[in-house]
Every structure is written in C-alpha cells, then in structure tokens.
Amino acid sequence: MLLTLPLQVACSLLAWLSLYTWFCHRYKHRNYEWSCRLVTLTHGILATCLSAYIGFIDGPWPLSHPGSPNTTLQVHGLCLSLGYFLFDLCCICRFARRKSMKKYHAWRSRRSEELYLKTNGHLKNH
Image 1 (cartoon, rainbow, N blue to C red):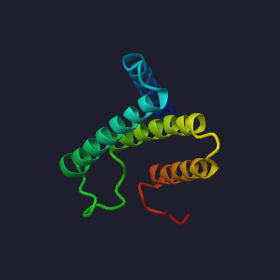
Image 2: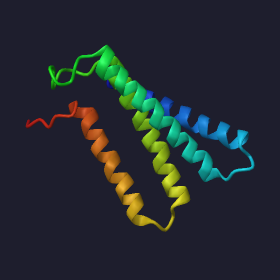
Image 3: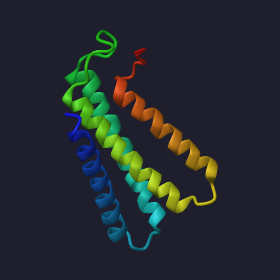
Image 4: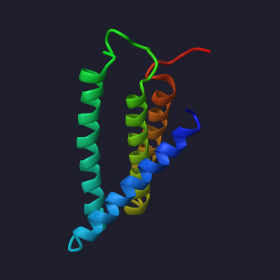
C-alpha cells in the first residue's frame, strides 16, 4: 500500500495538470491564471462532494470511530487532494513570484496535510 501512495499522488497531479491544460486550450481568450482558478474551483467542488460521501454515506462515522484505520476511499481522497496541492504549489510559484509569504503559507499548509495523511488526523506519541 505504501508503494502505491506516491503513484496515486503522481496520477492525481497528472490529472490536475491535464485538466489545467484542457482549460487553457478551451479558454484561449483568458489568461493562464484564470484556468488555474478554474482547476481550484473544480477541486473545491470535487473535494467537498467526496468528503461528504465518505463522511456521511460510506463511513465510518468520524465521531463514533475516531482514530480507526483509513478506508481505501479515504486514502484515494487524500491522494487526490495532495496531488492538487502539488499542482497549486506549482501555480503559486509561477504566478506569485514576489509574494514570498503566500508561498510560505502554501508550503506550510501542505506539510500539515501530509501529517493528517500519516496519522489519520490524530497525533500519536511513539
């Protein structure tokens, strides 16, 4: 399973890059940052719907089973989001060259996202 996580993240990143390329091709009259924002909107809608499905329908209910092992669908959702966050970091580096605080914030939020992927949202003392 651990060997397939980087592959899933890479496939997710490739999917987001493909969607970005399609938006750039489809909306040639707009600038590239606009297409990046469309990818962000798509990720927001997709992540919200997927999280709601995982939390309310597929389970386990996070309030009654905290700290339980991640399901396969939860891992796929996290890999999808991590691939998007890598795409977003590339967009920030491309479109916000002089905004170093925004870059640091993006990097810091990605690091905290990795922590949740490793610990299922709970800090463990080992």
